[in-house]
Image (cartoon, rainbow, N blue to C red):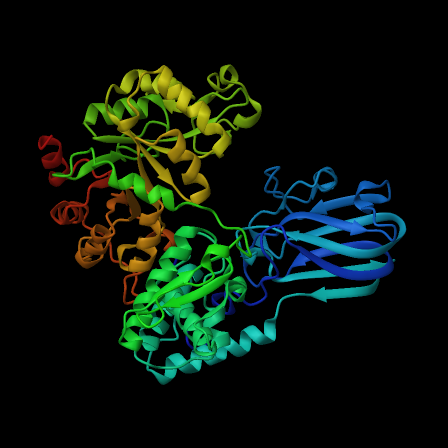
Length: 611
């Protein structure tokens, strides 16, 4: 598919898309309830996500509370409960979710326009409250435009709309005027994450120059949910200014940590808290002309200077006003070990989906691995999942479908069943799903980049598989996406290399985001590769200063989707790439790893000969 519209045009009714304003309409942390007082007899309940674009309806659970406090969902009064489409059942049609509701299982639609849930009762029931438990990240972004409609025999009794459309439009208009006043483009990338990053970058530069925006708009532009890093230069500056204002209103150089509660999804680990404290300390030191240190402690936030060098009450601190993860010990891991791999050359990584575009065996297959070994790649990427009997296999998705229309669900299949499933054909032969153990038996000491697509409880199965094969874990490179994934992975494989995957380009990396990632104890980051005419030397220096290595992906493939291709730093569509020139440039810049399919280029052959 070709994407031809890369920008929202200036003459559109909505010059600044309201989706940019991440924090408006967010109704709670992960798992927190939204309670709608009903006190009516109803026969039908409808929950709709009134989004103007495709979205997920994503809830942890739903409760319909009777006058005696019981959940009507658990009774025999429910005639039907359906969702417009089901992420869990792989259905594109209306799907029954009554069993999921009664089990308090997650409710998750597919990515679609205005997904909905309909609950119909056999007879009128008296409902005291409707309670929705939020899900999706720390901010509940996907569920912010919820509309709830309760009816009695087709008569509307209650309509609850949580999204703040008018407020969002007002703030979007303010942002548009602000950008126009400073002769900045209001034609933004159509892709919302890129547009958000770009607007925050523009506003950050203007704030540094002393310009002023309303606090409400600045808050609305903060990132509200994953992926990490949530902290960037803009976010850190906003929090530093907020902390500065609190100190200016405080006569004794301290204020309650509870006052930072609205930012708890940004300050959800001691890593993030430490990064913000360091940034704010530097910011206030420059502003005041005196060395200043900020201490963010569980009860109070302190400012420490030469004239006030103590935190008087810090020894009495007890616990944080919101949950945080204690992860700073991971930062010590990097100081005890050197990088193990050859940093004098660019290491070539074979992509699990396509090693050679001209001769393409099925992805995540034995022929794919053998092809990568035969060509001479330094590293081979594989995606892994576990079966119902806790065996590790090569697969990208839990549900597999081959060209014949056959399907297999790994989570409900044994290893024996999985290994009999044909994932495709190559050179006239059926190719079957391989186990990781079989792959380890043929790769020798060739390094593996593992994209582990399962939960933390399955890492023990992976560790046992590696140990049984007597494969050196120091030859493993892990791709990680979140701190929840990283913590147990570091515990299971402390001697392996861990790279944090970011779906960004080099020009989008900033010092605060890199500092946050580095403190988690990873060895490097993965980001989209630069084209032949894109100089990312300065950004690579930022990566080096953070003590991180770099892996660029996926070189050698012409991407059409703006999520993958992105835009240049001046918001222009990226030109077609010269694969040989871009690989040569990455080699010259000293990028440690490149995932590439451009195996027929002269530079690729030179790198092979450099081994």
